[in-house]
Length: 396
Image (cartoon, rainbow, N blue to C red; front, side):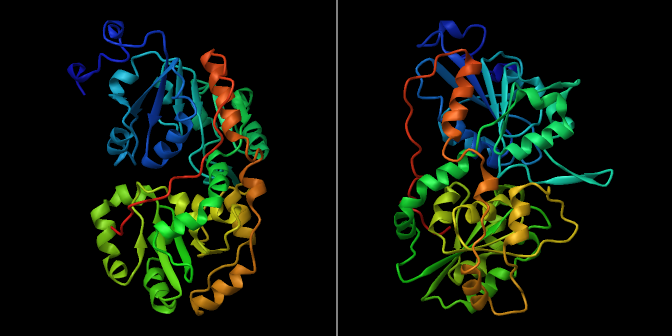
């Protein structure tokens, strides 16, 4: 992007000539993927009502960057070209991924974009969680971030082992996404009504992450089976597809692959609908090693896992690993309805490993932001609200 396309407002050498509110602290929200942007937006909302703060956005380079530009435009925020953003100075930088953060001139806060740090890789025969390692967290031997947000004390132990240089800048904050799910539970009936699920029906949600080992990648034939085997007057079947699938393959292609299922009544929720409303509305969840099934179990939804390939690497201390130990497996050679009923009696307790600071993530994160900004924290902040009811939603 050329310098002629750079913005003069609200940041830049000559910004004071054009801005209306002066002396604001500037916060740069760095989006890498649609998934990370969704988590980032919730963190930004803790700061942006403050009249002393100006938030601007940018898109950092990432292999899964498809869809990010549209997402950022839809926020209504000011979006800086990356080439400009990495040449400006800011009072705070926020991100939910790691790429190119060493180029950001600000105290940087790095937050997870899923349930903990689940993906792993084997190093010298030992499983190492991705995201808590020096390759991601250090640049020239020093931490890239001023604050590394953790959801559980166990992650601090992993960090101490894998990247001791970053321990002093890490803090156990909790899981804001989980807290928002819990805050949304009282709205369950409103979500179900908006999604077209009648009181007499049970909602089965199929949740897939991305990649060849995901449910969408390896077990897509499960969807027509569910529609064939579950009586439509008693069940609705829905699917939540990871944004990396939507934008990696293209929304048109995803809908085309599922067109027969959509004709048969499958509910396919677009990536701009808050998936947590669907999860709260569910009676059952079928999932894989992604975070969505883990969050479903954490709020008490019965979960059945579809077997992942044995070579799949999931960190042993991650919430997804606890779910894999305890949740029943869907047997593809058995009728599905009976397994759903059995699964309803085998609820899986994972909430205690999803967050070590339940109901406290928003307050903890907000205090940390203001500490880094050098501002006094406003005296009160709003309690977490339920995620929006998807009014006007229609099947794509």
